Each structure stands twice: as structure tokens, then as C-alpha cells.
Amino acid sequence: MATRYWIVSLPVHSSATSLWSRLQESISKNSFDTLLYRFNIPNLRVGTLDSLLALSDDLLKSNTFIEGCSHKIRRQIEDLEKASGILASSLTVDGVPVDSYLTKFVWDEAKYPTMSPLKEIVDGIHVQVAKIDDDLKVRIAEYNNVRSQLNAINRKQTGSLAVRDLSNLVKPEDIVTSEHLVTLIAVVSKFSQKDWLSCYETLTTYVVPRSSKNLHEDNEYALYTVTLFNRDADNFKIKARERGFQIRDFEYNSETQESRKQELEKLMQDQESLRSSLLQWCYTSYGEVFTSWMHFCAVRLFSETILRYGLPPSFLSVVLSPSVKNEKKVRTLLETLCDSSNSTFWKTDEEASMGGLGGEADTHPYVSFTINLI
Image (cartoon, rainbow, N blue to C red; front, side, top):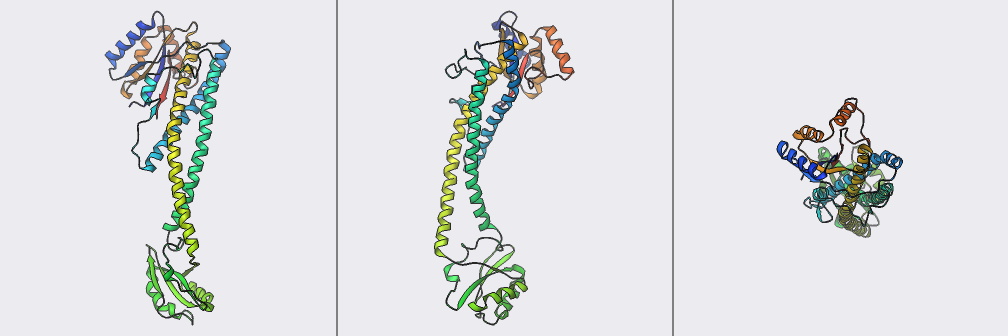
């Protein structure tokens, strides 16, 4: 699928049909791999010259926003499909592939009445897309909030033993708790394990002999238990710290463990649910934004064409997708189909680095601007 297109309008001096035939023949002979289609724009309401000039000032800004929203939703779809393990799908608009919607564009008269003022159509499109953009931000924030909570829990469960959550590593049978005895959890460097095993019984007076057990190891540390008399616990922590051993604060609670497990399961379910609903919303909203964008492009091409060629409207609008190597050749072909004096005028402007109508519109003797689908 081609992803970069030009939307172009050429001035018609005699017949649009004959101009279209000449363009087809010229492209076929000189750049046969260039996709070429008619871009059918209905007879829109022109209004006054002042209204067109005022509208032209807003067209570039609005186009940048609408195009940006379209790309933002597309990227979000790609990220969600990747996170869900779904094979990247071919996006559709109104049931057809994205490029087909562009190359076979049909104006939606029911949604955008052609008798409406151009500014009213453009403002309506901008408002609609802005609402979708705001909704996207809210939905992404909600989804990312759950992801952040899950990531925080996962970091606690996958970090080093010095900082990670120990609840899934320490079992009830590893802990001795009674009126007089307590079990502490020590984090020992892997290189200091022999030192720990040789000295923990003598760090303080009331340590239960041979009570230390290795529970878990990671790349840096080993996790050991040690049982001692309750009254000696604070003193043992001080002595252990002096020898470079870390005593982790840990208290096994079955209710807390179950609560954490339920919280994790709920967050995972919420993430999956939000991801699925966000993906479906993005599929639908991408289609809505893209159709709005194409109607906006039609209005933009029409208004800039009237400002360029004058009244009454007499132009041929087309959409092309030349290969990169043939772009310059196709530009020359299009230029030959324009009035030669007009061509010279716009060449001079281009050399002076002056912008065309609408700002971003490429500077040529015909109206042209680029659409990037990705």
C-alpha cells in the first residue's frame, strides 16, 4: 500500500475530460508506476473572496491538527495490537482499506451538505476531531494508570532482594512466631554467604542455633531466615548491619497476601479490558477522523483552487502516488499541463522560497499538497 499521496488540482482551459485523458496518457508514457485517480470534489459553496482568504489562513493549522490526530490514533492501534499479541491488521475506513477510501473518495452529502458555508464545514470537522482527540487522551490516561500500577507491582516482584516484595518468596512454614521467638529475614550478598553462615549464631546471645535457611537467590543477593528470641531482635539487627547484612522488615499475613493477590488479578483483568475497549474505540475513531480529514482536504483543495485560478470553478482534481525516484518527473509532467506564463510565475516564487497558498501547500503553478497516511 502506498503511504504518500499528492492531491492536485489543475486549471481547466477547455474540457476536464480531455485534460484528464492527457494526464493519464502522459503519466502512462513517462511514469507508468505512478498511481493516478480522480479526486471528485462536488460543487461547494464559494462564498466571498474575503471569506476564502480568511479561511485559507486557518486551513494549514487545522490540517496539521487533524493529520496529527489521525497519526496518533494509528500509532496507538499499532502499540495496542503489539501489546495484545495481535497481528497488525489492515486498517479500514467505511469498510474499505484506507488507501482505497482516499483514491475512491466520495463526498458525504448527508454529513457535510454542499450548500453549507465552507467555514461551517471546516469548523464542524475541527470540533468533531477535537472531541475525539480529547476522548483519546482520557482513555489513554485511564489505560496507562492501570499499566503503571501493574508495572509498579511487577518492579517490586522482580527487583533485587534488597528492595523487592518478599511476600511470594517467604512461606508461612519459613516463619516462627511465638510469645518468645521471632524469625527475621536477612539479605546477604552472594559473596558473603560463608561469612553469614559462620557468624549469624554469634552476632548476639539469643540466636537459635542452625536456624538460618536459604530461601532464594538472585544475581546479587541471597535471602536467609534466622530465628532468635524476641527481646534480642533489635540488637541483632544492629550487629547484622555492622557486618554488612541487611535485615528486611517483613511480617507474614495471610489476609494481606490474599488481598495483594486479588488486587493483582483485578489490575490484570482491568488492563486487558481497557486495552481491548481502547483498541476497538481506536479502530472506530480512526475511521471517523480519516473520513473527516479527507473531507477537510477536499475543502482545502477547493478553496485554494478558487484563490489560485479564480471564478467560475474550472479545474481537474486528482490524487497521485509517484515513486520517490519519479517525483521530479511527475512534477514536470503536471507543470506542462498548466499555462506556461503561470508556470514561469510560480517557478520564480519557488526560487525565492516563497510559500504557496495555505502555507504548507507545495509551491507549483498548480495547487498541490501532500498526504502522508502514516
